[in-house]
Image (spheres, one colour):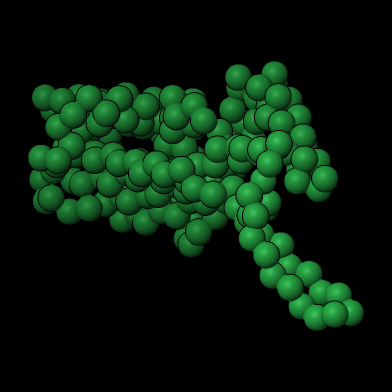
Length: 193
């Protein structure tokens, strides 16, 4: 019964979030060698040999908006900085999951202790998907090849649409640029649906 109630609460939460949006909570940590936005804050994207695929082109497009909002300008021919972006996505077990539910039983009676295994019959419960995501940005000064800014944003939640979530995570990762507060911090951003 408790499991069905938990599923109903999550379903209502997801449905209400679909109507009005939701709050995406990110854990962000940034490291900066910059104290202020320099003159001519231009950049170009840089990819590793393993990143020559359409997925990284999409990531760059998502990060481009956040970089522009942070005051940087893309200029592939006359860039001051190179920017490398990355993302990791993984489906994980929900924190409310009960994978053992219905697969075994344990009981105590006045006759002793018993343990049994069974299979659920006549009902089934599918856990809602849960995702762990991380985005990263590394900015290097092209003249010296020195890393001047590094940032990461991390989120765990039920949101399934990467095209809505990842751009917001890049925005969270750049909050406070070019001189963000030290240490890990929480950055919440409302995502419109």
